[in-house]
Length: 377
Image (cartoon, rainbow, N blue to C red):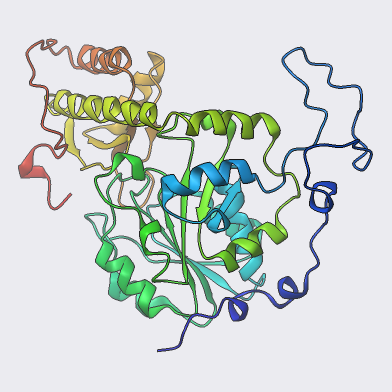
């Protein structure tokens, strides 16, 4: 089997590209008289703090604190302006416009397709099976010499389930000419090891995670990538010089000191996910609640659009996914706080003129509902 060679995957001009050298590349010290970056020496106009100096372009303080949590080396971490920045950089680094392609498995996260479109890169779509699993044979059959990136979203958005580890491993081993990306934005809500544990075994593997979900820092727009040191160097080479702001770096460092607090938030969300699923299954309009390893539920309703419109009128906001591949009649419902979930149920029951039950069981964590309507989903 051909061994993975990152240099053969990259666009030729990326190999020879000379990156921008910022002032903080040339002098990395913290002390001194800084007259090198054309900053404002007098401070900032804000009262909340001074932000007149450029931030660390490589965010080493965050990476050094994050590395032991993720069991990787700091040099194996890339931080981006959300995972979206990493997706775009990966496409630009590997895919020649109008020539190369990426492979995605709908329904999946929409930014893979959007970023490819922006970069004039072809998209091969291999739909998941009806139970939202990888059609491994079809994926392998659609990998060509121009397939540069293969995206797995696991747990998947919008279905919420983990994708088969066996299927991902099979593709990793077979697609040695491609980079395989496992997007783990929701991994903290799943009872499974991260693919970061496999980085040493698969040079063609890159894992994406985020601070937006479990860490509760969506407003910061901070995404994480984990890969070989060689690949991380490429991403650092082509990223904007100061892609992560100083306030974001400060707040991320603060968050990483409270990993136990993050775990508590996750536990509460999982508890509410089970309760919400148990309450939803009591509604006659609900046909299927798909099993979830994330912080949301994909729910199929009798008349999803009418339910969606009614919820909007009552200022309860969910996502209509009914036009997405394999998601006909489905709404995606994020797990809220207990009062938010109770308000959702109140509005749904009022629409049906259904009595409000006060004695529903807590739930077991299983979210599949109405077994006669659920087939491996």
